[in-house]
Image (tube, helix red, strand yellow):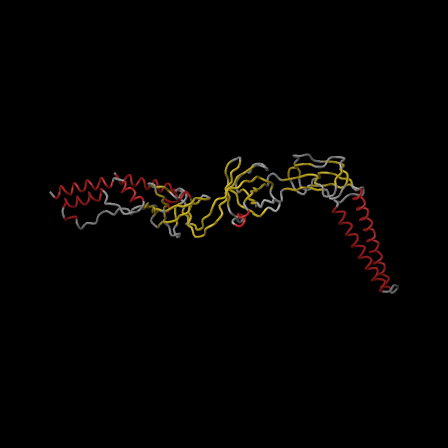
Length: 397
């Protein structure tokens, strides 16, 4: 009679183990009821007698543990990373592609005059130093003549100084006369240098006042604002040049975001050609705008940017918590309706249930379940989930 009762009890335990309680308990590493094999072994031991009572049963793997060697982990492509600290919030931004700072130039006339020739057209490819416009200026001719005269006077003063030095050595001229000659020579030389500097600032015109305006950068000519026969004033823009191979991303942002981002932070960008990552290189308030917006500049890392002027959208994660644990989003796996991460140990990985919070920038906040000192599976963590499910299926049979 007792033996029949034992068999009925065993059948009920098997049905219970095959139910939902057994699977969840093993997956999440919580204590489970005895397995079918354990009951079978116990029943066999009862039937066989006490001869095997002292024998040691075969060891069974720890609940929720996936035993893997370092070589197996490497072969599976499973990345093991440390748990991070610091949460954040996402801010969505709108922006555009613009020529990078230093890769664009608005070239202006250094001196007023008549436009004699325009040597480029919009879309022209040019090199740094290549001429854009030729301007003839009466003012420039006057500056060049003054510089030539000042140079001649400086040379004459230098020759007088040399003569007086020789006469002083012969005792013919007093030393005071020599000192006066030296002062006149220094003054004339200074005047000549100033005149040459004015000529250089005016574009180094020739004796007829003809000066060539050149591009300081290599690139493509944009708008050309000078026309042959027209007149330009000093400071008027004659052409724009930019290098299309050097571009950056410019986003408008709320002013408060400037204090929450810093160079080196990542920003997720969506453009006409798809999604890519960029690195923030600068953020500051835009003094040109009265509405109080800020400008965030970023540079794409490994993507061909669309042409300058193309619209883009970005998502930046700004830190606002330093005591929150975060893990990569692909490290969190769903098992039977619960969030689980796989914590690395010396013998493999252990499934640990966690309470997940906000998701931002490819990371998930962990509100409970981890201490922060763990190392967890990140990329390809889903393989561990599949292996755990496979082990459960085999154990169920």
